[in-house]
Image 1 (tube, rainbow, N blue to C red):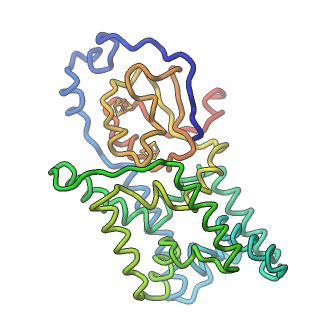
Image 2: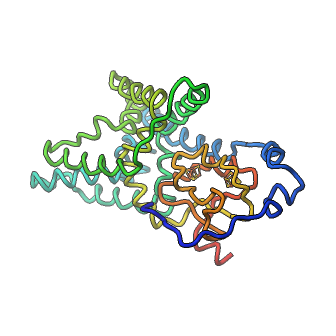
Image 3: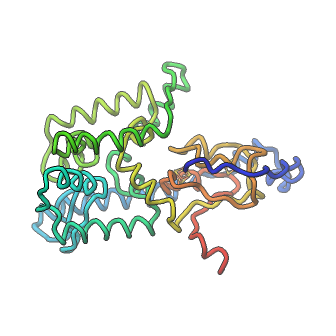
Length: 310
Ligand code: SF4
Ligand code: SF4
């Protein structure tokens, strides 16, 4: 994530070496030949909806399956704590000297979820679990449509702005002795609204979505969310990744068009790849949109390390 700056790029492929030329097709025919099946998006949305439904089913049927909300929950009795929430509680405990919230269940919950997402891909939480991501994906479609029709302009910011918010909300917790971020966190707000019923606070989610649609695509997820920033840091060493094979790529850039974090696919531009195989970096949410859209199947899910064994 922090500048995977390359050594010398490999020489660009000649036209004859392009995957479409090998099939006797033009680039346009090759792209049109690809049927985008939305396979991974369908699987991912099913998991996301299923996990969020599990909270509702649990409380409605009074089953102790998944209790609480996405900010802190219990899965079959095991505590799960959102890491960024944990950091805020730690800061507040430190400044007040009251460590009563730092129970053994709290610590176990933090490490359980930390380890799970370390192996499951860090920011995979964003695209596979977060209900705001789901809404924002629809907002993104509307935003792209308006940009295409030249009704609005795209406004982008520095991707590292997230870390300013990340530190800023911790500082706020320090001075206010409150988990201030939780009052603004669309993940917790949406999760609680689904489980315990809606409230006026949903107007904040609406305002956020409208802002993203008319002003800056995926503003919250790209530039603000400290939860996503935390998972991005966790995902730096994670084995589950998106693999890129240079020989299957025709540099059409369709993958970057659909990606929430196109900087993580920097190597798909012609003449930039430094190796025959690359992996998307830790900002990648493992959403699979690029895998679905790529006409040459140059992108795929992989477990790093296994590639050498298999
Ligand atoms: S990896 Fe990206 S740029 Fe390369 S062929 Fe696939 S969609 Fe096009
Ligand atoms: S690189 Fe692919 S899997 Fe990762 S966020 Fe972008 S589109 Fe999703």
